[in-house]
Structure formats: structure tokens, C-alpha cells
Length: 311
Length: 269
Ligand SMILES: Nc1ncnc2c1ncn2[C@@H]1O[C@H](COP(=O)(O)OP(=O)(O)O)[C@@H](O)[C@H]1O
Ligand SMILES: [Mg+2]
Image (cartoon, rainbow over all chains, first blue to last red; front, side, top):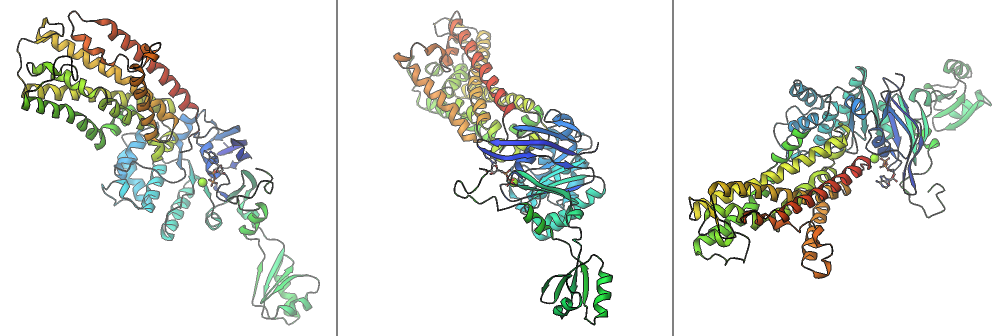
């Protein structure tokens, strides 16, 4: 099995609107895949198609090597999901909610249910919630309970749509650590987010969605690989220009960017010319710059007809 | 899955509150009758009510006749309308389907839970009616009187009461099918419930209209009160049989439509 999630030419049309417009996702075993996109770019619609909730207008979805939604009954017990926020039966306790959903489908052994529930509640930090009904939970607790439900059957794949919504910074940190730990233990994680920083901190591979189109899909390390220039930190950046004439790409306060992917060589040249050097680093593009270059305007914008070619 | 749905329905306090409220009206009526001794004259008011003062064993039937026109269909519409749309509105539908519960399985489980609700509700109404009738009214140990004047043994009466309970249940299944179908169309449980009630109100209204007589026999509420015919001597089977057949047609068609819709729709709730 070489792909965990594979889509080919996936399209979802709502009337005139192509919410998802021909995307070819390729998520591999062991990835932490960041599915980035502005609000309204089609992330949730894609996730719903992966899980068989929304039926594609065109194209195919393969999950864990099997076609969806045809093989849903075989595949989905091996997948944990969080789609557009958690949802629970408000009058039941967290434990009762987990037990109910676990009993509602195949692949969740009744014998081990109680133990599994305790394990996942521990993992998401809800072990002490007791019997209070889910409707009395805070937003963050609900999000944790939703994540617990996704983890209940030790899935091979986690599909998480905006999993940190509603969590405070401490909670976000905990969840990130939990997901990374699960990933180290072999779980492939697919997470959608509109937050660049979140994706940059966690993910090994990213896909960028812009108004339904996948405009970028690559390893994070490759996207932010060195540009071939070196950043020089110096109190006298203007003297860099004199020392390395023709190689200086830009000069700002305290900083000069020099062509050349060998900081040692740059350093030697500058020291030889007597320029004080405080620091040297390879220049890497920020993920933000990469994403902005690939995607254009924010898709929340509703411009007058004609200004937006695609709609 | 079926067990899960039954558990969800019957562990929910609201279900029992609904059933409790449903029983309040027949109990109130019984108390008033016993207190004042003023029964409606034969042929007036809900069926069987005129006879209960002299024979309390008829009260289960009177209780069913009291709730049948409005209370019972409302309760059934609420529960069946909630079935799928309630999960959609609460957001739990997507998690059930991603579990995966299977769309057909989920619908069947919902259907069975709704049927169970109908049966339990009708039986509880009849049971409470029985207890109330025994406590508040005179009981003739020899059985009762058929509407046609001849008398029935208590055994005959018991059998016919069971038949009547079955018939009322079947009549309510038609209501449940309407509400369940609407429940797969919308994400609003209230909308589904009101849709089913609108159908019933329209049906009751058209039934009184001469201009609608051409299709009156096919109106879903047309034969609801035919259970009274089970207490004639001999039993007047014609309307009872037609009523069951008509409900069966409605149930099959509407459930087919509900299934076709639910198994192919986008779940965007
Ligand atoms: N059920 C629907 N009917 C019509 N349009 C929809 C529906 N669901 C989503 N859309 C539209 O599809 C686009 C993508 O939505 P969505 O997938 O929710 O984006 P995201 O999750 O990235 O914010 C949006 O323009 C949204 O308005
Ligand atoms: Mg979304």
C-alpha cells in the first residue's frame, strides 16, 4: 500500500460552484499531512468526500488502498475522523457517548470497549470528567471528546478537520504532542487547517487548497529548502556590498542577503575584508511566502461578478 | 445498531415525558367522568366514552379514542421526525455515518426504534386506561356490551381490545412513515414533524369535504377510527382491512422514498 489517501480528479459541484475542483491528493504512510486552505476553500467538503458523507460529482477516492464510498464498511473502522467540530448527545456523559458511537458500527469489540474508552480519555486529558453530561462541557472539552472518539479504535489513519478549533494555546500544544506521538507509533495523520503556523509546526507534507484547487503538494522540507542565498547579520550591511560586489541581493538594517549557498565561504570573504559578522544562515523561504505565492486572494472575499473569473 | 437506537430512544428522558403527557388527557377525562358521573350521550364525544361509566373495562379503548385524533399522531410525528433530522441538526449524523453505521442500517434501526416507540406508547395508553378504568369505574365481571347491543364475554372483549391496539399501532405507522421520510429530506427535526402533521391535518380536513370525495378513500386518516368496528357483533371487518392495507401502502411507498433519498444524499450537516 503506497498511498493512504489517494484521490484522482476529485470534483464536487454545488450548483454553479465548484467547491472542490479536480484535486489529486497523495497522502503516504507515516505522513503528517497538512491540508491548508483559507476558509471556504473546500477543505471540509474534501474531508466529507474522503469519508463518504458527500458523494463526489466526479473523480475517485481511495482510502487505505480501497475505493470509497464502496468499501466504507471495511475501511472506515480503520479511520478516525473529526469533521467540522465535534458532536455529541448532550444529555449523555462523555463515556456514554463514546460507548454509543463505538457500538454503532463494526470493528469495535464490546469486550475491550470499557478499557479502550478509559485509555483514550486518558490520552486526550479527560480521564477525570466523571458523569456530567456532554452539554455541560466547555468547547475545549468537547473538542477533546471528539478526538477521543476518533482515537477509540486505534485507527491507522486520522482525518482531522480543523482539530484545534476552540482549544486554548495549552490545549493546542497538548493535542499537537499527542498527534505527533501517535504518528511516531505509526498512525498517518491528515489534518486540515487554515492556520499556517499550526501546519508548519506539525506537518511533514502539505497540500494547499485555493478555491477548490490543489495548488501545491509537497514535502514541507522541500518547500522550505535553502534558496541558494546566505543571510549575513552585521551592524554594517553596506560594507558587505563593497566586499562582495555583485553578489549582494538585498540590504536591510543589520542584514544583507548574499548569493552563495556556502556560509563558510561567505564568512571567509567578509572577514578577509574586515567586515564584522554577527551571524550567518542559509536563506529559506517561509511557508507563508510559499503559500502566498501559490494561492492568490482570500477566498472569503465576495467580489462583484466578473472580477472573479472562476465563479 | 438496532440496540443502540433503542437505547438512545428509551434512555432519553424526553421519550418518557412524551408518553407521560400523552396519558394525562385520558386520565383527566376519567377523573372528571368518575367525579361528575356525567358521561357523554351515546354517539357523542370520543368513542366508547359513553359506556365507560357502566363498564370500566372499556376504558382502554376510550383512552385510545381520546388520544388518537391529535395527541398520539403528534407524539409519533415528533419522535419519527426527530429520527434522522435530529441527528443531522445535532451533528451526530456525520459521526454515525463515518463510524460507519451504514446508511441503510441506520435507517432500518431508526425505523425499528420508531415502531417500538409507537407500540410502547399505544400499549402504555391502553394499560393506563385499563388501570384507571378498573379503579374509577364499575367493572362488569361478565364482559361488556358490543356497540350493536349484544353482550361480549370478557374473553371476547380482551381479544378485541388487543386487535384494536394492533390496529391503532398500524394507523400510527403511516404517520411515522411520513415523518421519517420528511426527516431524511431536511436537517430540521421541527420541519419534519410539522410536515407530517400538515399532511394529517390536510387529510382530516379533506375528509370532511364533499368536493374531495373522489380521493377520500385514499386519505391517510380515512380509516383511523375503524377500530370501533371491532366491537360490533359480528365484527365489521371491511374498513379495518382497508385501513390496514392503506397504511401498508403508505408505509411501503414512503419508506422506499426515504431509503432512496437517504442512501444517495450528501450529508453536509
Ligand atoms: N451544502 C453546500 N451547499 C452549497 N455550497 C456549499 C455547501 N457546502 C459547502 N459549500 C460551499 O463550498 C465551498 C467550500 O466549503 P468548505 O468545504 O466548507 O470550505 P472550508 O472547509 O475550506 O472552509 C464554500 O464556498 C461553501 O460556501
Ligand atoms: Mg471547514
